[in-house]
Length: 66
Image (cartoon, rainbow, N blue to C red; front, side, top):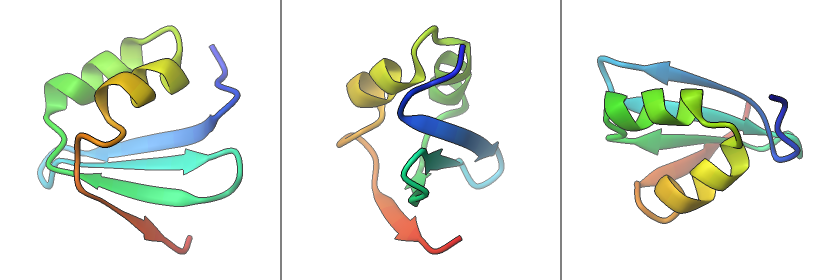
């Protein structure tokens, strides 16, 4: 299901980094995200709701220019 907030995402399992591209064009890297959190995010019916409940404000992040 397409998200109205998240345009795309990818995950580096070795580094535990979740890369999220928002529809605004901003790109953020969320660090030390367990694979189990990423898998649940990937399966979620609403990426935006899952992000707000389980990722936002729970993991260190940095904004990157992409």
